Image (cartoon, rainbow, N blue to C red; front, side, top):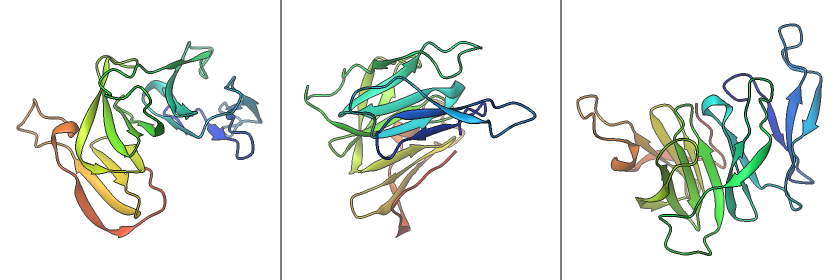
Length: 185
């Protein structure tokens, strides 16, 4: 569920994104699903966060949703993120996450990247050193990741006294245990 109560789902058989419609005070869970326009082969992963911002991965490309209005909460189109900051033109994105603060992190060929620049398009991707992951999730004051062995890793917010620091400047810390999937808010 997105921050304003927008519900999203990803179809198992077709990779299409579905949005719940008919949500209101009387029917908070809505009354039906509607399919958002997509790509022929569908999406492999979606995330929703700040201002109902949707980001998704389709055929190895990272996209963000465009065309939001007060009456069109689901948006009207998809635009690919630029690959500025990524050394290879044939980079394959496998996971993307947007947090409630608008921070966008992604996995491309196992490497972790954070989006830099103005929300939502940004200007470039910044390579995050220190770990290869298969999943990354952005929270309010932390970023969590899972590597190929399902080990749990996190990056904590910088100390309050360091106003110029952000999560891209902290280090990954291993949390004991393993998981197959992780989510945070």
